[in-house]
Length: 354
Image (cartoon, rainbow, N blue to C red):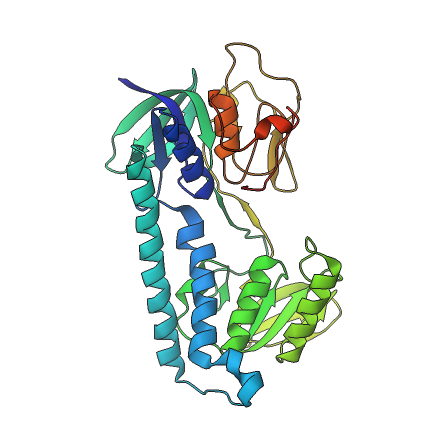
């Protein structure tokens, strides 16, 4: 038996949630397929919410913001500090998850827990958590499966002291020293958090400046601020090898330098969440470039053809992405949007949520 919806969303992160809510707001029948036990995606469970909470908690319990005024700092028991960080983060994650769930329920959206994959004829097959299967049919399918930290070959993530941006949230102890590989938004954020906790942090930046997507002057100000608080910032430096030699974690740099930190955080990029979405059964030619998916053509789909919307990157029709997903949902379902999208070209739309 096939359940019929106007819109089926795969993924309940910010893009999937907002796209589903936008459609439901205008009276469409919507379902969200989420593989995790709780909605919200990595933004709630592993990324934005936990990291922002850790940062504010670290600044508060260490009195970091008052050091410049009073010239004082606190030396806290590492075990107590770690407990305070993790307990506060868990509380905020629970609150944020409940907020997402309440928003889904308020809009009358059906939340289906299971693994969704694309099938022929605008269908989504869902392998349910209890082992069963449901088949969903929809005129529009929004793919918002999210992303995960990149795990390039050669990085020993099986070492208990080598972390990515997800496993770092489950630290067994606060280290005395930390090497952060990657000076993007995630790397800079965690480098500042651990610096506030009194950890000796070395930030390896392979490029000429921090946060290359930001204004050059802002990047310079951030680099100066990091150095002012004692962070060891090494620009144009790459980690050629990360290994455990003689029982010690070792980071060898491409310039011949050698670092021996207690822990390593690899934060050099993210990639799409792996999924057996069944692209092959759809008449789409997909190419990957700079982390975004798009179709080769720029012309609108023929009447009766598959209507597919993705939620990451920026590309042409028929994949019209937007990181909040409300705009492409409005365009595809042909109902008014609260965003004046008619002023945008037909072949593209913006990442901005407003």
